[in-house]
Length: 149
Image (cartoon, rainbow, N blue to C red; front, side, top):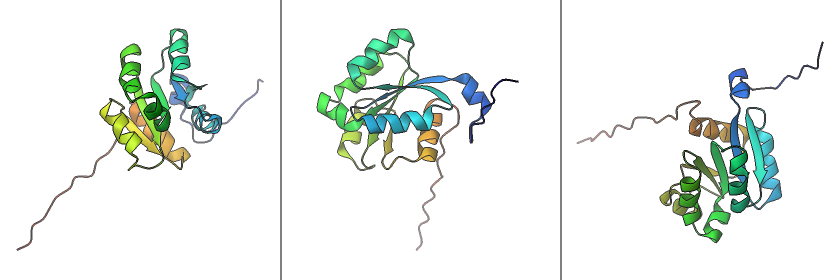
């Protein structure tokens, strides 16, 4: 009998599906943390620059890029549109310090699909990635405004 590995909280269909994700961040620790959180259900690669992400694309197009908001703004948020143009169909998730982060807002205007704010938590990261990869629908609560007279 071969080795059997049990992965806690991993759905078999996702592990078999194996979507490709590039984590693009100049911070080695953030890259490693995100790679660790996602590697069970995805083919996740750590990439230190936007140029390297584009170089790796011929080896296998990513379904999702998780990019540093600070890096994108330092480079110019037009990099978001450039990545979407050069990697057709890719989704872009931007990591920001907080949801009110101006870097994130600029990246969304440039074409990013969603934001992920720190601190990074496994459940939040996996949920956001799953939604962007079409594995589960995002949810919205209906809002009804009642006017009292």
